[in-house]
Length: 143
Image 1 (spheres, rainbow, N blue to C red):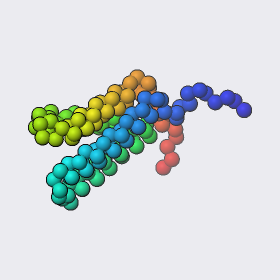
Image 2 (image 1 turned 180 degrees about the horizontal axis):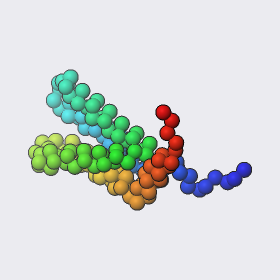
Image 3 (image 1 turned 180 degrees about the vertical axis):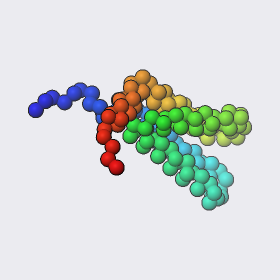
Image 4 (image 1 turned 120 degrees about the vertical axis):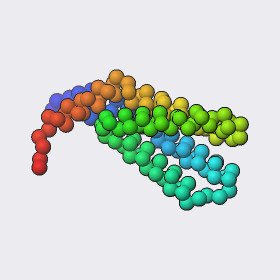
């Protein structure tokens, strides 16, 4: 029996594993921030719950897609990250002045997202995505 290669094709590089773990942490932080905001306002609207569930489901699905080797998912994560920065930047001063804990946690969340994206776009991650794509193209299609 042959010795397996030290870097088999389907072993995820550490950068992918780190990004996945960070993105799960971001999801947890999103729930904490949401809960703190709801505690401050006292009333939980059904719309707020639906928004949280949709955001978490989308982030979870994109994280799963990334860990399955779908390169497009990291681009979608990057676009959503940039689009999410716009409202945060415009309202940061107001959040900082009224809800310091939420501002700090949200800033931590943004930093973690940026770090996760950095891991997803590292060279070793890109090479892994490309190898998976090449392997998929070599597989015969069964219709």
